[in-house]
Image 1 (cartoon, rainbow, N blue to C red):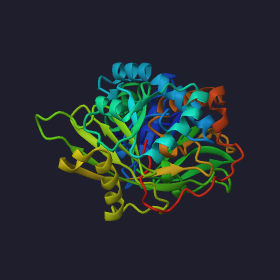
Image 2 (cartoon, helix red, strand yellow):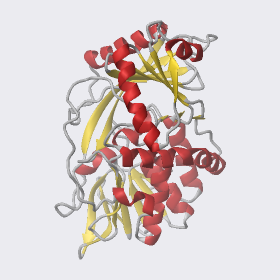
Image 3 (cartoon, rainbow, N blue to C red):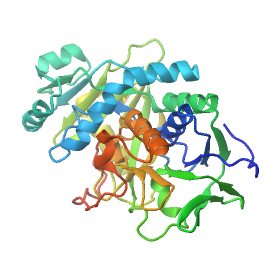
Image 4 (tube, rainbow, N blue to C red):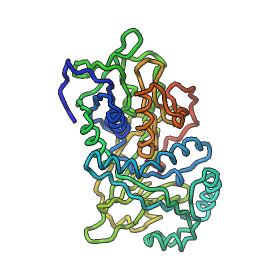
Length: 399
């Protein structure tokens, strides 16, 4: 999906960014009959290609994030139909694995913390089953003998974001979306309304509507009035991809989210034997360096939970920058600038929120308003920054 700029082509919509959120917006908008051009350039720290792909609102439920988790449940429950439609439209597999998630506690303090969170899951109507340590090991025999217990979340699944990206790219292209490999330097306004975008190569692309879906790269885009786009910050995540030796069974058969002496860690298996292990959560700006300390913490906790990880081959080390909004919730739909939309700020939940975001953005682009279920996350809402999320390399979820 790549083409040269044509002065005669003026799409209805320009989508800036070709991650999961940008491509699902382009695909759904094209399905609604809009002509769409996606402008993107490979950037260091892009979040979508390195994400683990957990679809786990039950095992990520946190006090104070109830509305966010309800949106996550809505989006998670759309995944089966979403994937079926996407695979039919693209002709490619999306890497969806409906195998449930095991949340394991390493010690008694970890188990008490998970038990406290089970009250919230019950309130949200999320299905989980309390398990003893022996029952956890019956499900996942490679868990350490020290594991005290946990919870099985049968509705929390996973998807391979790289396969999902490829499928969305193909589906958007088949629906007529056009791609331009370039960087948007600024949004062009005329009389206070969007007229299109200017490219780093010097060209200009006219469009009646522009969607900024470039994640942590959005703040670098110029041409916008002060306050039109809320501030977005990059939140660094380091992770590893491990490879199971040929002919050997996978180390884990389902996503395993662990709590090890208070530190969260996860293992997400793929159909091809790969296991994604991660991830740190670091407030370090646009730093995309891999660090020995960050990777060591992930491996330390993963080894405590599943000792066999030390025998696996390291296939890849990755760094991504999650886009965080001031309140750590998505920014969706129309802004105060006519014709300008946001699809950004998904923080840890970009993969999980992909189906619901695509539907919401298509509705906004065709009707001018978000659907009811997404209005809490309107880009024009009043924002208040949440408390600090830390600057260390401690493991946390990367979804």
